[in-house]
Image (tube, rainbow, N blue to C red; front, side, top):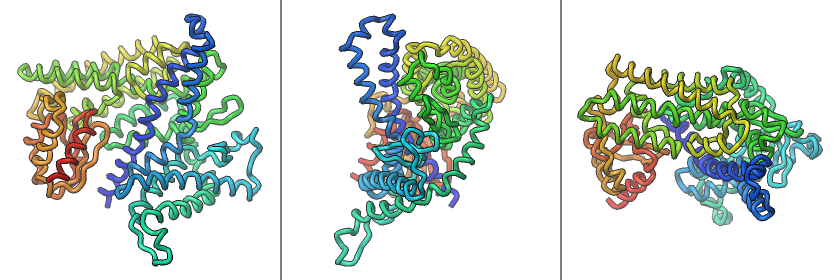
Amino acid sequence: MLKKYNQAIQKFGRTLLLPIGVMAPVGMVLGITGALVQSYMIARFPFLGTPVVNTILVSIRTIASIIFDNIPLLFAMGVAYGMSKKDKGIATFASVIGYLVMLIAMNVWLKVTGNLADPETMSQVGQIQILGIQTLNINALGGIVAGLIAAWATDKFYNLELPVAFAFFAGKKSVSIICILLMSAFGLTVPFVWQFFVKGLTKLSVIFLSPVGPFFTAAGERVFIPFGLHHLWNSLFRFTEAGGSYVINGETYVGVVPAMNEILFNLGPSSEYWSMMPKLTRFMAQQQMLCTMFAFPAIALAMYQTAYKKNKPLVKSLMITCVVTALLGNVTEPLEFSFVFISPILYVIYACIIGIGAVALSFAHVAIGYIRGTIFDFAIFGLLYEKTNWIFFVLIGLVVSVVTYLVFKWFILKFDIKTPGREDAPSLDNTLIKEKKYDKIAEIVIEALGGKENIKNVDNCITRLRIDVEDIKKIDKKKLSESGCSGVFFPAPQHIHIVFGPLVEFVRNAVDDRLEIR
């Protein structure tokens, strides 16, 4: 029971990547256009102020902003698609219907109880206008609930049989109808319990919003990554009262991301509200940038220098790949998984270093958005925008880099940690991945896992194959190493994770194709 619960939680955390995966690139577009229409940028580059250029930039920003105006709806669809097993299309469709019904149900409750506020003051009492409906502002949680219910209803009732007189409404058609009923009940019930839920999250926000709050958010994210729960952890303070409530121009924004969106993309550094940015960004990308831009190169160098001489060429190739992947793609797992299960203590020390660095950034009033921690995000949100204090970010990052390098090198040598190049671990030769021979990789993976008959379920996240097997004793770890994976571990009985990096989705597709053929 506990195993199934843990796997369900991990799977739920991975589904949050779907909407976040859309938000990240759109956020970069908003960031670039938002910076280029600021008055200080126009003063530097007058052509940006010409009507044609300015209209184009403003239009692009307006089009892109639709994503952030409907974040809960993205979560509804993403969660439904990720959590459903039987028919993802029906689940996604039902989630949208369920979400809309929930909105109007809460609107009905507000009207009937006389709690519907005037549009001018609705934000002050926790109400919001969504898709033309004035409703209770429950943020991304409403979308998540709609997605979970749609996924459950799909898996439970997609094959529902009804009497002949009602046969038209049976099967997949019943899913949306059931979601309408359930989300109506939820929408009419949630206003009664929402006030208590908000109070609980507000108490949690006391910890997050304290001077040392960034330590818990940054270190916590690193600690939760091996369990696949970091997306869930991040969403807690990004989209709920746990991240605080912020009043901007008379409107209340709940969670870090909505408030930062308004200031970063609409108001800009010239606004009086820009002074709030360090309070918001201390929980966001600048924490991740400490890892990708400073800690990772230091860890990679320490691992390379402590590797056995004969293994250094392969370790060098692996480390460069891991660092570049993180710098350009914000994917940190390949490098983190190279030592987290080998030395959990070293991993906790690494998480604490990042947490302390995040607190230092907060005290230095660094204000670098956004969600992702790539070098591109640093250039856009750190260099293009004014008043970000990016120079302090670089100085603190360099200190983090030096400390990380010294700690890792000493720890690895002192305790003889079997990091890549120091033991007979999974192959460091990732030629098959580099040459994109996914079919060959799939063949090796299936054979190493004991064949098709031993594989129960195949899934993946950003960097890993996640596979359930019948008999774990049939797994050949030595054979798996021939696939070019960078790590293999067993987080639960009869469950294996195989790390391939950011190209894992193509490996998973090849595995699925081969399992269907055989």
